[in-house]
Length: 138
Image 1 (cartoon, rainbow, N blue to C red):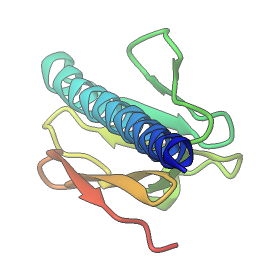
Image 2 (tube, rainbow, N blue to C red):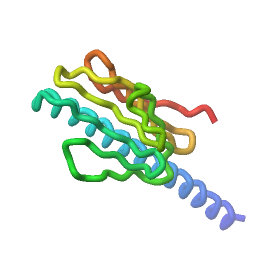
Image 3 (cartoon, one colour):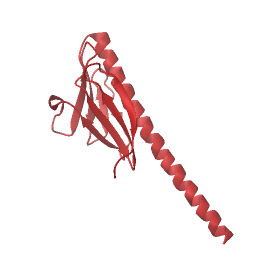
C-alpha cells in the first residue's frame, strides 16, 4: 500500500513538471515573438523604412524582413494572428507591418498550448507591443 502511494505521488510530480515545462516553452516562445516585434518596430524607426514580421501559421515559423533568418516555434503551439486584410496572403501567412514613424498595421498574435496562452497586442497607432497571459477557453 505504501509503495502504491509513493508511485502515485511520483506520477503526480511528473505530470506537474511536464506541464510546467510546457508553460515555460510557451512563455519563451511568446517572449521571442515580442522581442521580434519590438525589434521590427525599432528597425523601422531607425531605417525610416517599413519592416514586417511575417508568421507562417502552417509551419510555425516567422521572419523579420530585415533579417535572413527563419525563426521556428515549437510545433505543438497553436499560433493565430489577427492583422489587416492586406497583410494576409491566403496561404496561412500573416504579417504585422511597422512604418517609419513607429506606427503599424496593428493586430494580435496568440500562442496557445493545452489550457494556457499568451496574447501579444500590437497598437496600430504607436506600434507598441503588449504581452498578456490568457487562459484558453477549451
